[in-house]
Every structure is written in C-alpha cells, then in structure tokens.
Image: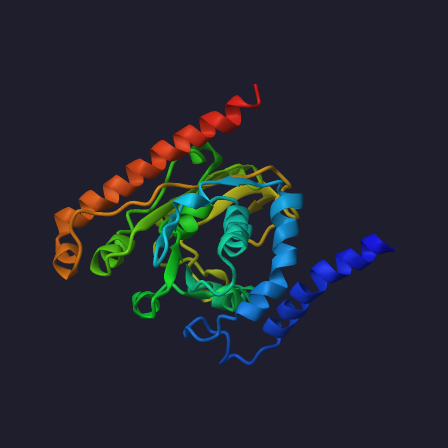
Length: 301
C-alpha cells in the first residue's frame, strides 16, 4: 500500500500538469512569453523527473561544479528521438543542483507546438520557449541562462552509427549570442541515450531528392528529418514519431566552461571569428565525448 501511495504522490502532480496543459486555451503556454515559466510547477514535476532520471534510466552525472555563477549558455548534443532522455536527465539535474528559482530557459523547436501541443505546453511550465532569436535575446537581457541544442531534430535523430559524433548542424546562432552578450558556454554531453531508440538510417534528403516540393507532410509540417528506427511502441518505424525509450543507463557530463577572447557586437558580426569559436566548441565537445565513451564502454569489458 505504501508503494502505491508513493507512486501516486510522485506521479499525480505531473499528470495533473499534463492534463491542464492539454486542455489549456490556445493563447496560453505558447512558448512566446518569458512569464509562463513556473517555479511552483517545476517543483511539482521534480519527483517524476527524479524517477525517470535515476530509476528508469539509472543516470550517472558529473561535472556540475563547472557551471559558474551568473548567466551561462548550456550547449548540448542529444540523442533518443522526441523522448530525448538525456535532455530530461539534464533538466532534472539542473534543478536538483541549483533549485527552481535560478532562471533558465530552454529553446524548443516551434514545430512542437504544432505536432505535439500538450507536451510543448507542459514544457513551458519548465521554462521552454520557442527557438526564436528575439526570445533568446529577451531571456539574456532578463539575466537568465539558456539551454540550447543547436543540432535540433537532425541531432536527436542522428543514426546509431553516428552516436559518438557531436552534431551541431552548423548552427552558429548560439555563438553569436554568446559573443554579443559575453556569456560563457558550458558544453553538455551524454552517453547511452542513443541506445534508447535505435536509429537505423535518416532518409529525409533522399525523399527530398526524389520528390522535391511534392511531399504531403502530415499536418502540413516539414519535419526536416525522416528516421527509420527500432523503438517502443512501434517496433520498426519511420518518421519522427513520439516514442517510449528503452530503459538504458545514461551518463551525462557537464564540461568546463568556454570563454572567448573577444566579445561584443563587433565580435558577433565577425564571420571568421564566429566560425573559429564554433569550431572550438565543436572540437571541445567531441574530445569530451570521446573521453566519456571510452570511460563508459571500457567499463563494459
């Protein structure tokens, strides 16, 4: 009986929030405002996120001492499809380490509000905003930190064969923001989430080449990815569908912060310098991921 009571206490608040998000009017929880983030609702969600992180995925984490005081820009590369379990784990650990009041917003693909509005609206309570430059700038001006996964959908659905490669998709917008507002970049890496959804291939470019401009995308949303994968509950499936991740152990790591020699608007407009900074972040994250893979997979031998 105590187990059932604990289960109810842990999960009920989260599902209540999910239901409220699902029935919310279309003009609220849109991800277009910084004011709908709710420390109270974050706190209500933490017991569920803790169970997901430490029981379902048995997550190990380290490196949180590398997060400096003040504003930071967390930059990650993630795996595991729309469930993005490493992102969930990192979200829980941030609030566990720093509490619900330390202001942070996470940039989320705007298509989530079209494809899966209840989940997108629920994420707004946690601090999700649409991945639009004006909103990111507004958050930085408010003194908030940002969490960004520059690789987006192509990163989270990258094939299993590329699971140990950092993929930022050439997106340099986060570098320009970090330079313009003199915010340190804190890389986030992870191991294991690629085993929660086995992406066999990515065929979006093949489809576009076969029928350019003629594909009737579901809901009229061009997904920018078309993975073929093995996963629950579909088995062998195609397309960026919601999934239930396999319960595989995860290891998340926060890397030492990166500060650049030059900052300010002039530095952010210098294309060569922006590219140089982007390559530095990419190389740093890849070296850290190589080390984490060696630690995690070496322990299996």
